[in-house]
Length: 159
Length: 116
Image (cartoon, rainbow over all chains, first blue to last red; front, top):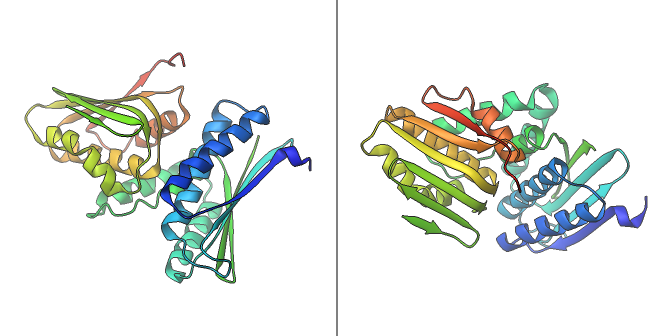
């Protein structure tokens, strides 16, 4: 793949870096000649994945940094975010959600279902809506792996 | 009353609120605080309320969750809530479709594509 069609960087797990990553992703997509809904969908996906990494990430074998990678070829766009996580409950929730999305045929239905569940929760502490949103709004297919306390979540969609 | 953030603004007037800009806050509770005046208005007198999000450029999922909670608050208060979305903006178009059957208290108003 041409180097111009990929971007990667490592960021600190701080709230301010989420917006920074969104701006970099948007600029990269513009440079690749992309526009409209594809940019909106991908920037949303970047924001949700990095936001999750900031919220749930902690110190892995390589420290607490978050690594980000985005590649584009003629047919697909792929975003991967890797970060350390030691809380297995958090990892389990991510894996469970992604498996649910892989099994389901209608991301919109799953997104609406999660919205309804949220409305019945008494304490609005966390939404856990982001992965459903990536699948429904962004039309990305999600996958993940967890090795040596590093969680890698990838999202891919057709262009 | 206007609540101004770094890059967003919530303006509340009688029976309506307007959301403008980029809504990017770390948690649903941060959004609950930002939308507190809307919640108070929904709990107050009147039988209808309108929220215009058409000038909302971006909202993270915590904000989406907080917006959905306002729908349920309106339902509990037996108030008819209208949310105006700009369907030319991806997140608004998709959210409008997902919220459609969430509550009988909610009316979705799809605004014609804005010139950006």
